[in-house]
Amino acid sequence: MEYSVLLSHLRANHAALFCSPVPIPSLADRHHRRLLNFPFSSSSSPKTQNQLRSMSSLGVVSSNMTKCEAMGASTYMEASEAVDLNWEDIGFGLVPTDYMYIMKSSPDGTFAKGELQHFGPIDLNPASGVLNYGQGLFEGLKAYRKEDGSILLFRPEENALRMRMGAERLCMPAPTVQQFVDAVKLTVLANKRWVPPTGKGSLYIRPLLMGSGAVLGLAPAPEYTFLIFVSPVGNYFKEGLAPINLIVENEFHRATPGGTGGIKTIGNYASVLKAQKIAKGKGFSDVLYLDSVNNKYLEEVSSCNVFIVKDKIISTPEIKGTILPGITRKSIIDVARDQGYQVEERLVSLEELLDADEVFCTGTAVVVSPVGSVTYRGNRVDYGNRGVGAVSQQLYSALTSLQMGLSDDKMGWTVQLN
Image (cartoon, rainbow, N blue to C red; front, side):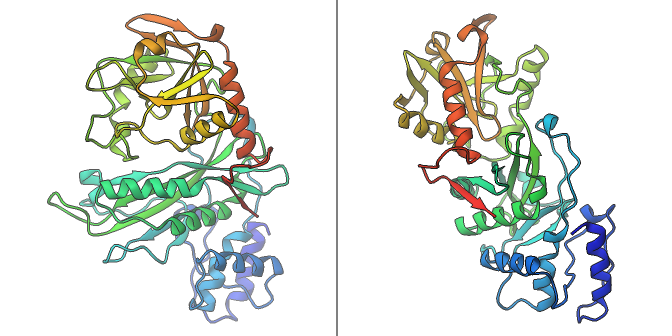
């Protein structure tokens, strides 16, 4: 149903129903208003009723919810006007979509009664834990559209587990794995029209967990907010699958032993911006960091893990507290082993990097990104005649085919949404 038709339907039925009158949002302000509990009449379409039942199965519409609240929860499903985007050139930037999901913690630290709201600004106390002490985490995952129009999520439970691990390190309560996954499903379905066509990109999903309660002295916040927003995206690097050029950083470090390098806390990313800005000013795509103790072992790139290939053996830095346990990293290791490659997780020295046959990066945003060159102290090493390496290409094709539903999911990693 077109949005204008939806509004006419709501106005026609509103007076006859028992909900309190509320103003109907215009197209101009719908991104800045909370989801309003508009009811549908008992003659609502079978499609609407089926959508409501689907939401109930996700735990969003509870059995004790009033008729007004329950019907209001389904109204977003009817706003289905076409998205006017150039899917061939969307890049990796924020595109405001229709809805976001918000759930707050109870005084005992548990989460319940999350809700969809129109995408837009949120209220935060100036003394909130996230603003004053950086008590916040984020995750990143994607939804893909299959050729039959259905939507696939890729390993959302892994993101939920990683968020819970990070929350424990930052003294924060976190949603359960089921709450996390259900909230992701609901948010994607609410923004279904923003999922790019098959092969044109993906819907990037950004869950956030933050200390939203006010706290002045250094202490855990008294309240926490779990939020999810989404945006359609294309390639993270402007080069796409074309090789990127990295510079090895020997002054700044991303993480230290005993710190928070192994979790996805917001502070990890602000600290890499200066080195990244300097590198990009010199024409490089990104920065590759070394360990902070010996300054000789590979850690990771600003926002992705790194792999080297030598004599058909794939090696990647081991997870030891300073490196983020990437979900794409973990998936690539399993895919590579399934295809017969030997994969080693260990200390990887700078010398091995410079002598490698092939280098590539992995991450939710980049998926698999081949490295064309690495520059260290002014010396540049090129890989694979500056083209896409055979291993990078093979693993990229295998993983993206699985994520988009173009190949059989023998791993059981994808979750299909109707």
